[in-house]
Image (cartoon, rainbow, N blue to C red; front, side, top):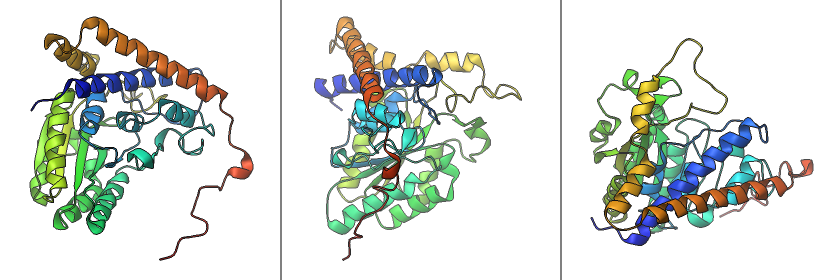
Length: 329
């Protein structure tokens, strides 16, 4: 599959934005600049960026608790995302959603949730709306290996296949659900093997390779948009950091080894993509370094934006909680 230069550069740019965003989040969270949970996406950037590069702005995505990478991969605002983490009014949800709730309907971001697998029915419902309305947009949902065992995930995949819905189920298999290896909780070799039970294609992809993720998603999008129904994609990836900031390693003992982490770091998704661009004369080392530097500046500007944004007023607590008046048919 031929991928144009603009797309390849965009993929690198968004991966660097996510990487630097997450590194900065770790820094300011450790400094106590904002509180609450935050789940770093470092190491998994190729999954979301490669997949989202295959979508239109009018296509929908829904994410999970490891939520910063998904909207940024879809082209979301770095400033609004950072302000939301800081709990400020200029954030995506006016500071009321925090780290796990970033939404932007203008570019198809339905939002994320801290409830495991809860976004899977949401994305499936969005796909149903496309079919009911006769529209050609598709819906894609990101969920982890732990979420793959939830009933909501199985029910959604079954219904999507029965109703032939234009939805892509994208499992980010980062090996561990908090501290539990997926190999201890999944009866098949690969989560994508489960697709046959729902009469849909199951595709296992190297989640460290953004181009491989892009190509697999393009095929799934074409299938969905042409009325052939859903696809289950499993991106085999790895998170370099702990499940969430502040969690630390388990006191009962290590659930993964330093050697394992080091082996995965050798296949860093950004390095893999940069090597491809350089080896194929698409971009020089200097151009790649410039992209990294520019993204770092962009993130620094976002932090300044967030720090200077006010907190929401207490009397605004219930605003935007429901439609008022409630629309009637």
